[in-house]
Structure formats: C-alpha cells, structure tokens
Image 1: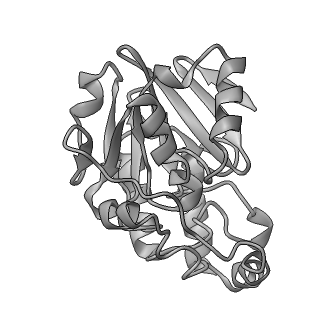
Image 2 (image 1 turned 30 degrees about the vertical axis):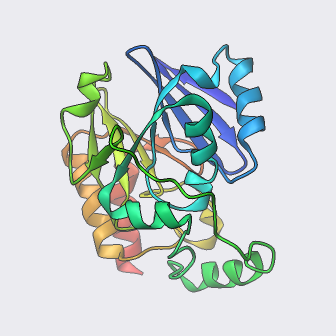
Length: 240
C-alpha cells in the first residue's frame, strides 16, 4: 500500500506504515519494519520510483523491533543518517525491544499478547549504533527538519516508550509512531497505544500534539485519523 499527500508517501510493510518525507537531496524515512524485510521494502520503493539510496535520513520514532528492525541494514546500504531520541540509544545499540509487551493497556490486550508471544518470542534486531554524524534528539527540536527542507518539528512524545518522538508538519500532519494508534480497536483501546509505559504520559503527549497544531494523526499502525479524536479517546478511556 502506498498513499501520497503533498510531499509525503507511505509504504506499508506488514502492520507498520513507514513514511517518506521529501527533504533536501532526497527523503527522510520515518521508521522501518522487522529484520528480514529490507528486500521487500526496496521492491515497494521501486514501484513508486524511489531507490533506497534516495533516503538521506532515517528517523526512528522509538526502539522497538517493528520500527527499527532493518535499520542497520538500511544504514549500511545507503549511508543515511539516523535520527533518534537519546533515551533510545542503549536499546538500539543492544538491538533489543527491551520493554515490548510489558504492559498491555487493558485486559483484552493481555489475552491477545499471550497468544501472540507463542509465535513471536524474540524482540531482537541487528544493533543500530549511532555515529558522530547522526542526530540525537534530547527533547523537542524545532530547527533540524527546517534545515533539511522539511517544514516541521520533532516533538518528544513519551508514554508508549520513554524515547518516543513524533514529526509534526506545519500543515498539521503528525507522524506519531506508536504514541497513538488506529489498530486492534475491537479490543477497546480507542486510539491508545496497545501497550504503554505510562498512560498519563501518553495523554500529556496527545495534549502537546494538539496544542502544537496537530490536525491529522498518521500512526504507524492503522489508517490516519483526525487529531480531534484523541480528545474523545482520552475522555472515554478516563471515564471507563
């Protein structure tokens, strides 16, 4: 699946959506997928007239294996620069989704994960070691994207993980990784991440996104949706 909006394209790999934003000299890629999917990724790029060598930056919204899985292979093959939050560095260097599935957001998800982990026992990926040329995000960063031709900012949006970051464009498009989802909603999660470190911090990140002007949420899992639905999802979750 590939969708386009202005200078943004989305390549769907499994249940993860990887977003490509046009930047100076090529593209910034937001997230990758599990290890072993690099070849499939290249084929999908080819269909839309892009090559992996066009990718100049890889922004990892957080350190989990369904977002960083073939990052090391992409960097090795393209020389792209990695953008990640400082809190991700240890897990990326170990190649370990160290907190994956630790805290499902509700009891129904706990049952789902019990079955899922019968088939997905390892949450490992080839280590990603950031070099001096890579970009380490400390908190919010309002300048870096503008310097590479993208009219947007990088926001620290923890709650799902402490290293979660999002990209917010000036038109209100927000690429949030797993800070919000549109996935497995039959389990009663609303737009919450399916597992969390801290739910109150998730809601604080949602408020930040809305206050900074988010209008449309592009999650890594599920279709895009109106940012106004975050308010409703939070109210419903708090009242139940």
